[in-house]
Image (cartoon, rainbow, N blue to C red):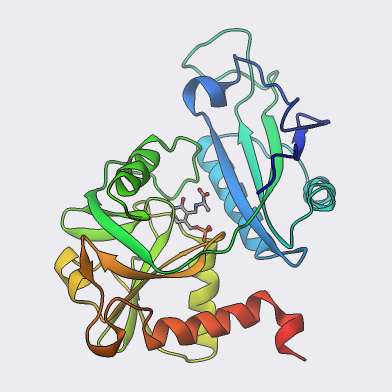
Length: 290
Ligand code: PDD
C-alpha cells in the first residue's frame, strides 16, 4: 500500500486524505452520530452498488437523517474517486453524519444543519490464507442492523482477536452465534449452509445477501437462515466469513481448534471452495463469459 494521498469528497468540496479537515463540532466526531457504507469495486467496476445504496437509505432513515445527495450525485463522486486511485480493486468508504451544529448537545439539531458527507477510496489488498478466529460475548447495542459509525465494541473485539494472534472475533449472544466483528458468518452443517437471519442482531451484509441469492438461484446447496449455538459452530464441517472487502474468507481455526475433520481439517472445505468459485464469477462476469 502506498502513502500517496487519496482523494476525498468532503461536504461538497474535493480535497485529499492529507488536507481534508472536519469540524470538531461534527456530531460524527462527537457522538458517533452517523452511518456509513463500504462499497467494493473490482477491476474498476462497483459491485453490489444498488444493494449498498439501499442499505445506506435504510440506515439513514433508521436514525432520522435526510438523504443528503441524489443517486446521480453519489455516482459522480464514486466515478471521480475511482479515477483517482491506481489499484485494480478498491473500496469506497462513505459516511453521512448529523452535521456540525453550533454547540455540542445530545438533542438533534434542526433542518438548518446539513448532514456531513464524506467519501474516500482505498485499495483492497489480497487476503492471504484462512482466518483464525476467537469467540467473544457480543457487547454491541440492539440495533446492529443499522450500519452506524459507532463501532467501539467491534473494534475492541477485532483488537482482542489480533492480540491473540487471530484475524477476527466471532460475536456470541446468549449462546448463539451472531456474526464477526466486521463480517457475516456461514457454517456448513450436515450439507446445509447455515447463517444468522437478518434482524436487529446482525448487519444484513451485502456479500451475505448476494451469496444467498446466488446459492438459491443456482441451487448450489440448501440454505437455512437460523441462529446456531456456539457448540454447533465448533462441530461445523466448514465455516467461512463474508464481507465486501474479504469476499468468502474460510475459517480454519476457532479458539485454537481446527475447523472440520479429515482431509479438510483446518483448511477451506469443498462447499466453501465451490461457493467461492461461483462468487468470483459473479464478481468478474467479463472473465467467466470468455
Ligand atoms: N464491514 N457485519 C458487520 C458487523 C460488518 O461491519 C460488515 C462489513 C459485515 C459484512 O457486510 P458487507 O458484506 O456488506 O461488507 C457484516 C465493513 C466492510 C467495514 O466495516 O469495513
